Image 1: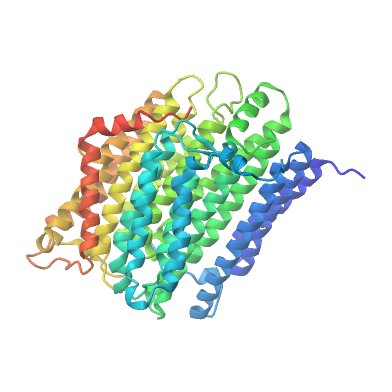
Image 2 (image 1 turned 90 degrees about the vertical axis):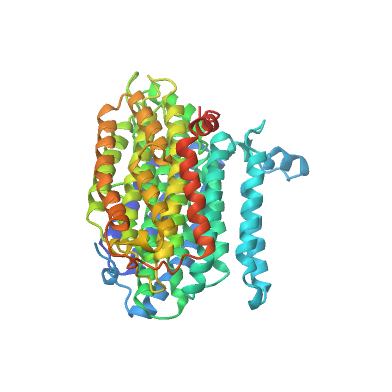
Length: 101
Length: 515
């Protein structure tokens, strides 16, 4: 069975859109964060599909960099969320309104 | 592709070209280790070592300004005049930030060695971003620039209390983090689509492929190219804070510790605009819809620039906190820099405008660096330990109590408006010149008009400092320690030198060629 590259790219676009909507609509910081990860993984899927199409190793290596950076982001993001939770007992991003103007 | 690396292949990577950035990366790691083993009574050595590392990297940049061979890592990193100039600017930014931080961290009870390590990491990321000539390197460097900044923005958490300023700093960190990660995802997806259209991540390879695609009739490749450009523009637009991707900026700038705000208002903009310029000039300048038209993205960039100028300057008028005012002012300045990016789009029928715009951008960034670092240094001096004392009202009568700081702040305000004989004028003059040369007259007119609006809120600051208030009723400037004052006066000297010694500056940037 041979799935065309376009199918992967369209799937990745759907995933990316879902992720972007999640970031904008979700109120829970962890879920927002998961949506960002979904966007990054949509990009990974597109990269791998294109790398297959071009028969080029560059796209595959790019994916490894994206995964590594995503892991670093998880470490920082969860630390920040824990710090916020300790003070506020809440990770609802609507509660973050110390500064206005 | 996968031959065993030998000494010869390593030399073939031409690492010496990227030496300033590599040395700073090594220095950062050494600093992290050294700080771990320093006993508590010798912790004051950490910032001194950080300054030494930055100076060493600066000297290496000077020796590397015009290398015979400019490409390293097989064309992924370029060390031309553009890289050398901006490297020096960002190293100076980090140097001044360290000077601002020492006393501030001590009096706010957040003195930890990691602060300097994170600062140097972010500087390293900026340096790699400036030289990046490949989408992969741009992405990794962008993250190396941003991730330490998320932590630094939330750094007052380490104070250990639950005071209002700790909550503000935390909130600043998480907002910056969520928006930053969101924008990175846009950039990566844009890079993936550009890779899909062109089959390469190298900017020069993309340039060659774009020419072929524009001349050909492959509709799906054209679509991928346009969508990829748009998404990459959104991703970098968030980083440099242009409208409509600016919403995080005021909150993050206000909540972060003031020296960190100073650093990110300058370094993140330098990194973002350097990459944007390289991507647009080296990679996508020939992306046109038909022969003889300006680049397809020029219209969009023009609209973004105009919106940024108008919104940034108008909203700044209504601010009462000087930190927030400077945040909106930095949004407005991103608009002026965006004008230079828009000008590049006319390269197809105005040859040479891309280089003129790049040179204008370099001078603008240099002047902006000195002005902004100086202005934030004055704010640091005035800020009390609990984070108050930075409202416009707190500047009333500053001339009576601290005339030196007041005069310096006055000149920084004039430079932010763009009054002649200050650095800000030089930058605006060159950028507006490039915009007019590119034929974007309406945009240049908007730029001039919004500069006039900006005069309103900067002059209000000057009036507060010099004309209002009784004798001896001004702000005592508790944070005006020796390193902070040194930063203020060094920035002041920089602003005046860039503004007055015009031939020096233009001679320096005339060496810079992007194409």
